[in-house]
Length: 319
Ligand code: SF4
Image 1 (cartoon, protein in one colour):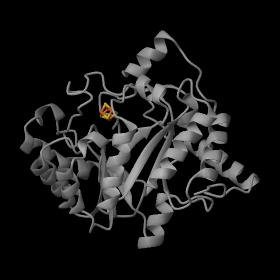
Image 2 (tube, helix red, strand yellow):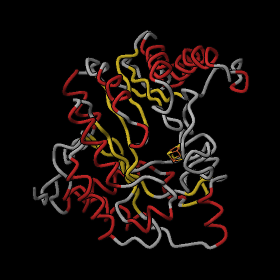
Image 3 (tube, rainbow, N blue to C red):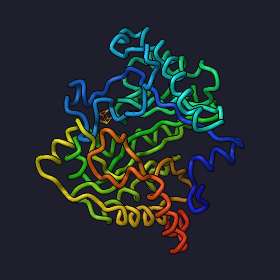
Image 4 (cartoon, helix red, strand yellow):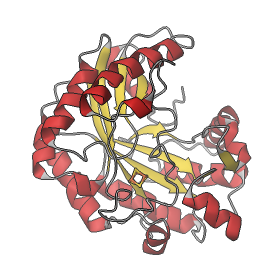
């Protein structure tokens, strides 16, 4: 683990003395940007799985197609957790798990149904925490009131995609979500004592390093609990893949990505936990950039640059 930035793993290890492992769950939700409420196309990068390719890996006998009824979805949550545990236990011995509702928009349903599904996951053995990925426009006061009831958990946070603060890029990505709404909902979550993790993307076409740093400055202003950063990656079956196929655009090289991340870390508030600095993407679906498959090389490259330039997280941050 790097000593040059505050990784979430190091943060949790220091707080609880042990590692926590996230289990990705498909809670059976949909999204207003895909069901026609806002749009049917979804965010440009959104996949068939609602940007949750690792979730819902379940026992072979479970067929998602059969789980359309609510009760079946709830019972599938146990099956998903069991299967995910079996997978990750081959790699890690730790038995502290976080149920990560990852696919689609995981606060987009009635409060009763949300509670039922979160509680179902929390009732499983060794599940000690909850992480919920959602959109800012699916966080009304009733939902926030429900989320408040999980603050007692050892590990709990809500994840929201900022992606970028540049309006042209937000329009191109078809996010259908204003920055002002996002800002106000993040504030409401924070006032309710709910930790927030924000997602951002580096390397959007037409964005310079200065644009990316403006997104980092936006995140700094919101002062969330955590941040996830990843390179724009193009996955098969997405509208982004179609756009790229029609008119290919330049993607960042690994070296340039590393340069951007190092600068972002230098300017990021030192108290923001780092949940991701690179994503490796599902191999079978990844079209470009292929260098992200070697996650270790990216992380080692970041670490090397941090060391050589004597940079630690927040060393150039100004409040
Ligand atoms: S908000 Fe998430 S689930 Fe909805 S379209 Fe965008 S990426 Fe997909």
